[in-house]
Image 1 (cartoon, rainbow, N blue to C red):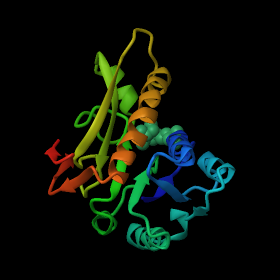
Image 2: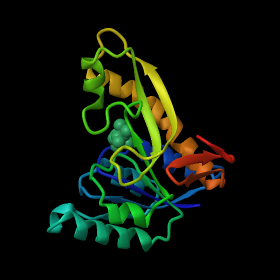
Image 3: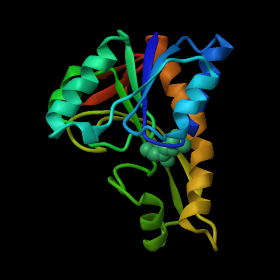
Length: 203
Ligand code: GRF
């Protein structure tokens, strides 16, 4: 299974894909890492792993549609079976999402459907929640609203800050995201209508 990973920042999730791909038994390869930011540290991670990198800055485009079309073309050049959003901080157009429908994954740092959008850790703290977490989901036109595949929950502890909570959630992200990618690579996971299906069972 050929994957392309899209990032905007640190790329700690990307690192888990690079490590899993290098280990050989994940069932997938990382063909390229594409960032919309030239200074994303994830690009260095990719280079260290010998994976091709591309930078496509949204600032070089007049509107979202033309950026997304250029991005889709760039991705298509690598002929991926799966496109992985790993901290890619751009809202995608319906055209882009449709083009990669059923082979586009995202991880969102909340227990969806709670806290779609930004600042999820602070919002969970402000709400006085006792737990928080992350969700891997197929991407659809609805922002952070596509069919959920796998969630991991963590406790919220007294004295937590958005940063300490984010760190606790990230540890779980690094477990569940590569796991979902390997399910996909093994042909066990697909999107059926607006649901995810694993091993023939709707989730
Ligand atoms: C993660 O918290 C992910 O859930 C969110 O952006 C963050 C990316 O972190 N979408 P990293 O770049 O993988 O370290």
